[in-house]
Image 1 (tube, rainbow, N blue to C red):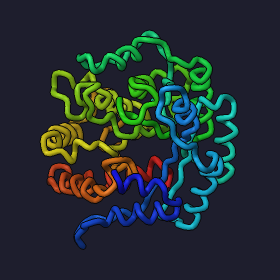
Image 2: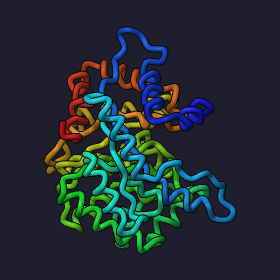
Image 3: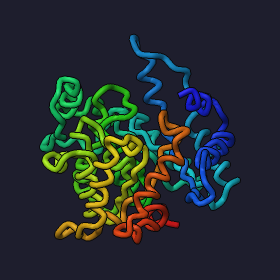
Length: 344
């Protein structure tokens, strides 16, 4: 945690150096090496505004405004060609200004943008569908958020515009897809449900949207442990709905970054058993794509508990793919699928 806090104080250039060092930490000459990094910015304007409210823990606002952050990161990417790609972010809470910020990023050469539903927005506020939530009083907030309308109608109304714009302009959208993680309010993680993206793309005639589902659904108690769920509950998880989304839509991909259960000896076997079964199984009947052609390695580096363990995370996947049954899929998992999504 101390290492994470220190890294948060560094300049972009020094953070990039720290990232590359972290990938080599305690490594062996025979270990795989990372050659291409994607920096994915999060527009924190909404989060810092929310945290200013009475009773909330206060933080200093960002040192630079978001457009300057994009500019600085794009300059760093230009200093490191073929090694670093920079994504910006899009935030419907900025009202009509979201497009101005995206357009300024496009002018800089940025074609990918992060969107973060746990700020308090759904891909679509569809009342005919309700995200399933596991039982237990500790998850009451999640059930409440799942059953109620989206809390910020003005921001929610921008989502259709964003989805249509990104689809028609061939821009990449990178979305948090895990029922937990950083949330402006407890329970907002439920808004990351992959099924909501399915309904949003169909409703807004945007089936060709380039969409990347970060964390691939995760392994959290909100949805019966996601990738680590038992067979009885797996079809109720974010992970299952994420798999179906990447199989059914041409330009939707999925990453497995920051699923920290992979570093837990109790949970790892369940996750890897599920992952192997999906990789080696036949395509879902009627689906135009196979999951193994869409899934990508990732880390979500610089987040707590991942800093300092990046190589350990990479090596777990490298060891997993040494299995002869799935080793033919390793090149696409570690490189090929991500390059197809990035268009490089």
